[in-house]
Length: 146
Image 1 (cartoon, rainbow, N blue to C red):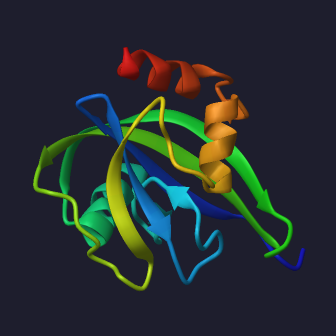
Image 2 (image 1 turned 30 degrees about the vertical axis):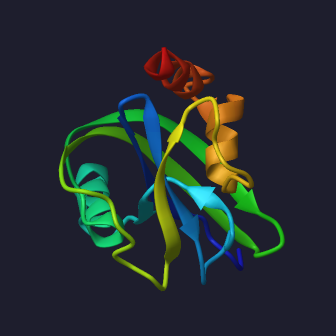
């Protein structure tokens, strides 16, 4: 196996019926919109990774992280394969800002029915129901916008 799968952690943060997204840069999926997240590091729990990545990328503090779903994400062009662990969390405090300018060029809240395009592959998989458990994540996002 030349390119073994890696583990990513992605964090759904919804506040006032809006989803927090970053515009990716200088990484696979550059130019697409994604939720905060990143690589799971050795010895780290998914929840610890979520707190660290959200802080590093947006300066926000989160709380009450909970498992949401898994997606299997193969980036054919980049020859990368990720199993993405999706968590949801509450925004505890802070105002989002681009805290890692090499990784993201923008950070914004978007209404769930008006998400920007293009979306990062793992987020597209989550929203299209290609998650495990199937459809649970997309259904939960739809309920959050009600």
